[in-house]
Length: 151
Image (cartoon, rainbow, N blue to C red; front, side, top):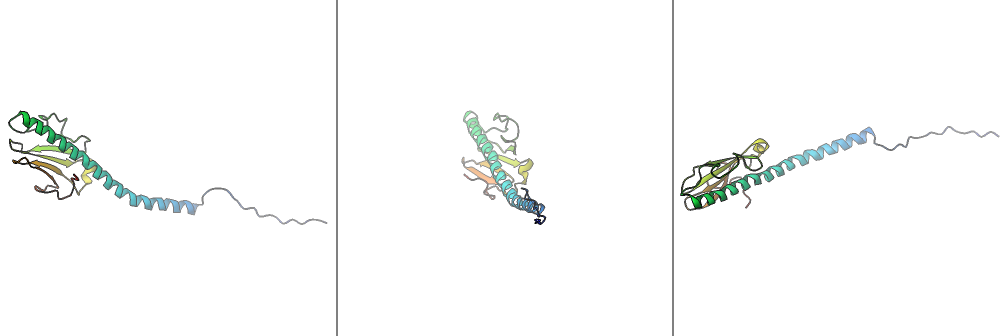
């Protein structure tokens, strides 16, 4: 007797992804990146604010040292031996204003990518005649409107 064999149907069992699976994966990655990147940028902005705060505080300490040796506060950043007009990590432009024997005002304005930080677009330290240290933000003279200073 003859054995009749049916032609066998072979299925491709290759390991890999189909086009649909790949497209779904790419779409999911895109959605997750769309959610994560804005939050990551906000975190970076908040982290770079520390650059302004640290620079302003270092200048404040240098002003106190200067005032201990001179009849009035320093009138420029070069008198305080500050290297240039930018903060330590170059994210802010520093400015010393209205320096006199009783007080001074230090400003930090964001530059570069940090200028996208609209919540805290400027930070300042005010030292008044009664030696009160006032931390302000966003151009306010009396308060930290943007809640930028965390200490």
